[in-house]
Length: 504
Ligand code: UN1
Image (cartoon, rainbow, N blue to C red; front, top):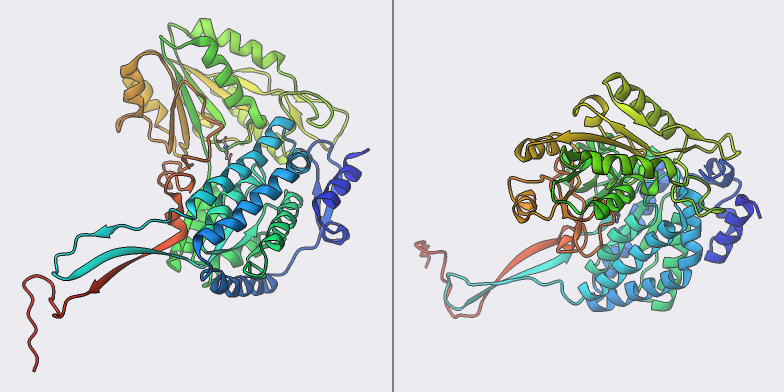
């Protein structure tokens, strides 16, 4: 079966009507072969506005459903995702080019966040606070926000929606999702899966609680600018974030921005090199370097450089690159030609700055419209040129260091620090890396790589946008608003300390 007909069969099994992915203007291609796999119909900005109005209506009903009951809907979503895991994971592989374990792994993250959110639906706690007034009680109540907008990127086409949606639903919000134009098919599949969960849940799940907007940037802009969307969670490039952030700020809406990641690892003299090698290889080459958590810079202490880097280069030379659908390759394709061109440009610039490049060349897989590359390892004389920027492709810049303080500074010298790792058995180095004067990233790890974060911790938070705020920990608070309530159960009306206000 070719990719196009397999996609159609998968979508049908997942519950997406043929008319929803054929005959339209938005052409979707599989990066695996470059073939067309869908032609969806884009909606207009006016239609997007109407969808938001419908979502607002849904929110007004949903907010009155008790939170633990809302959790039941998310529990059913988790069940439906378990049932659809194989098909949805395969669809992710087709639409994004992820290898099978990564396609399935992404769906597993969706299941995990559903489980997390179900528990959370019984734990949306507020504090009770000692009040200074006699006969009073003061407490916090957390209320849902309204319509939550989700804008997602191609590289995590389904998980990112679920990290936001599962929390937003249990918190009592409605969700309107604008997926990447490169990955609308997996979004339609998620929508169908959600609808099955909602049908099982019954009439208490209002119509339009969850909607998907198919369209281009103009549709996303409606979500960003609409007064009835108090929170937009947007994942994508730093450039996109610089546009979205100020627009939201202008109308005092909240933003959760998950943007670039120019992430680094540090290999110290005492590191377990076998462990480091595996972690670096996965962190740097996994998902063909197209994760915001991809390891892009590596600092290796000069005492272990010659023991590690030649082995790493060997791993780069021997890694299998190929179709994730037909082979057991560890590295699949880049998303498109623009990604390939961006990678080549960065490699050229790196060479111009004295970088020694291993790999990076195109791998022919028999399809002109598909872009496979050998991951590139570039030994750099210093942190210059493209090393300071995030290129969304498998390039690892390797540099030598000798002084721990200097390497901490170099580690923190880029803008988009999101995730970070240190490989060391030295307690002082490890703890300093995690301390206030160590890594400045939202994710800081010891003896594991930069990628593969679990949903239990708050995800992301490159330093420029300020700390992890998605999925686990207490990230739910971003999807709710806090009210402080004071109740007077005395027979008097004590004012604040020292204030008197006598009237007849
Ligand atoms: C992303 O690349 O946008 O930590 C998210 C990881 C994944 C999430 C990546 N759990 O690599």
